[in-house]
Length: 278
Image (cartoon, rainbow, N blue to C red):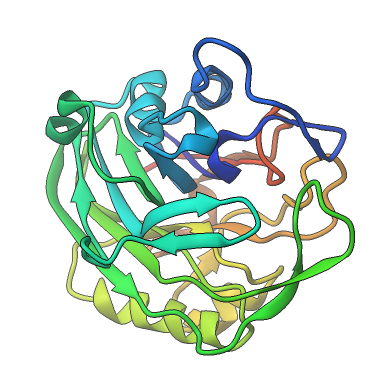
């Protein structure tokens, strides 16, 4: 089985590290092609837009799920509101902090704009769960694609999605996350997610952009958790660090058949793809 995690940067085309314009016509096409190329049985996606003007008002979770051949999927909003140039995120006070959307919502083709994560799978799903992760009270100066220098960025609420999947040898649990970029705060979020899924069927697989480098995530989780791939994923044009991870508890190293971070023409992150024998 193939598992993949990908921070898609709202499907933004990237060429040699610089943003490129969305194509005319179907603005969701670059993201759909990139996702389809991964051929993942289970796919975790971060920084997805839903009905945002900047990305052509595409329901990106629905488009990515269709491109991956998923039989089921969920999208969890981290922020309801619009991305406004020069102002950042402008929240919608009428919408809740966390809302979960799925195939039935995609059929409506309309809704309030939001930004969040998704989990899509070709396997049958026994149960879905979602959780909101509060933002750090402090921000950090960060590099923004297409802009010179650093910009002071406030942290955002985050979300986590868990699915209990039906495997050939019984149920197991997969979690999709996108953690804070604030050091220490993201470790606390990671530990909170571990506790949140503790009672769900094992093995546990955690996929996402953790904003934590190298060996830090398995050390923070402790116990039986291990990294299934040590591959640089950021920045996409010349990877220097690994922010994107596939972690597991209750699964031996012998289960890993291969791991890679292929180059795709979307996002400032590379996807991380891991083939496992479950």
